[in-house]
Each structure stands twice: as C-alpha cells, then as structure tokens.
Image (cartoon, rainbow, N blue to C red; front, side, top):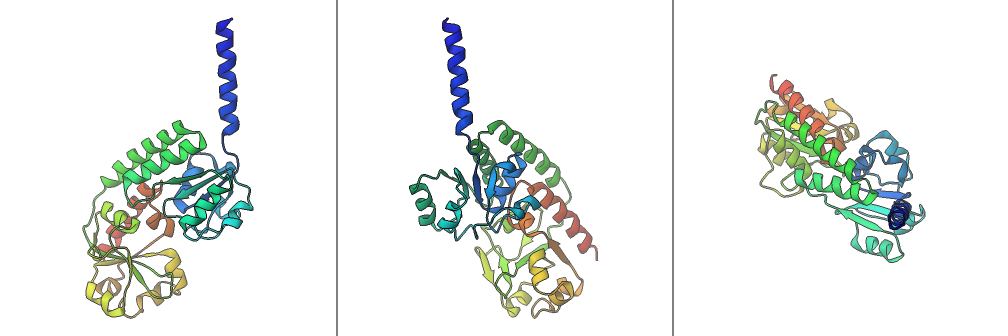
Length: 277
C-alpha cells in the first residue's frame, strides 16, 4: 500500500512540475532567444525583442521593442508566464514592474565571456525545465570551441566597426566583439578603450589596423563595400587599400551566443584569406 501511495505521490508531483512549466515565454536579448531555439523550445515563445535576429523564426514573432528599453505594456500584452531577460535588459524599473504584477522574470548572465555563455545556457534551460538539454548544449559548445580554437590564427591588428548612429563606432575591451576577436587570435587596436567608442576619421587613420571587421547591417546601412572603403579615415588605411575587410553577421560577432564556435571558425578563415592579399 505504501509503495502505491509513493508512486501516486510521485505522479502528482511530476504532474504539478509539468503544469508549472512556462508555455508563454518572452525573451529579451538576441542570444537568449537563440538559446531557447537551440534547446528545441521555440514553440513556447510568444514574443521577443528587436535584437533577436536568429533563427529566422525569431524574426516572425511579435516584437516588444529593444531589450535595453523594455516597454512594460508591450510585454504584458503578450500575456507571458515567463520573461527571460539578458542582464543588460532594462531599464531595471521595467523588469521590476513586470515582476510586480506577477510575471516571472528570470535574468541571465550576459557578460562577454565563454563562462558567461555557459551559465546563460544553463539558466535558460533551468527556467524552461529542460536542464539536461542545457548540459548537452554546453558540452557541444565546449567541443566545438576546442575545434575552432585549434585553427591557425594570424595575430593581425584588427579594428571592429559598427555603425548604428550614422557615425562609426569601434569595439573596445569589455565587449562581446573584443572577446570574439581575442578568441579568434586577433589583436584589437582599441583594447585600451572600454566599450564602444565613436571614432573620427583621424582616429581611424591613426589606429592603422591591418584589417577591419564590420557588421553586415553596418555595411548595408552605409551603401555597401565600395562606399565603406571610401569613407574618410578608412580610405587612408592599408586595410582599405588592400581590401582587408571582413564582413560578419551582426548577432554572430556581437551576440556571444551558442554559435560562438561558428563565429570563431568563420572569422579565422576569412581573416586568413584577406591577410593573404
């Protein structure tokens, strides 16, 4: 009798846990969204933010603005039972207001490091009730990173540029872009600066990078490669003269997400190609 009571109790507990698993999830942060899909849980998503660019299915969901400027009413209109937010999401008051009306808000690590990526995967998987899948993803990322890091590196002096405001910004230290460059065996010419810094034409010329990395969206916004190579400051560099420019997908190079091994592999291979010119 006791045995059957124990089994029945186990069924009740299991059913309660399953019932408590979130079914309407909103993600705030591109790599957070990507992890949810990577875990095979994309069908739980009812909305995400404008930084969620991968996979393509993420771009078809209702958008709630940008994760650094979260609109509370927009999130609540989707009736989520869980909000998974990058620790860079905000403002903090917006997340507090969501939690204050009873929405479960889980904030996950989003520092520019491999350890943070692994912690992020585990946190997202735990919040969704699929911890074993999270461990499998961490193991896969670890294996693929080892393969990517084993590829030859050039140690070339590189400048990574984005253009979100009409004027170019360079990626300094404490950014995901800097960490990706470091892992790919590049020397960031802006490493002595912190964060993303606006760069004048004179500053770009003085930095004299061996090569330039630019995001695809930035290149498209500026009119393409030829227009980019003619920009003041860039045009005076040896990188432009020798067309040593590598174009990378924005989320791949800036997101420090589960496709990090792919980012390193692609960056290393393309850098090797352009440096041979």
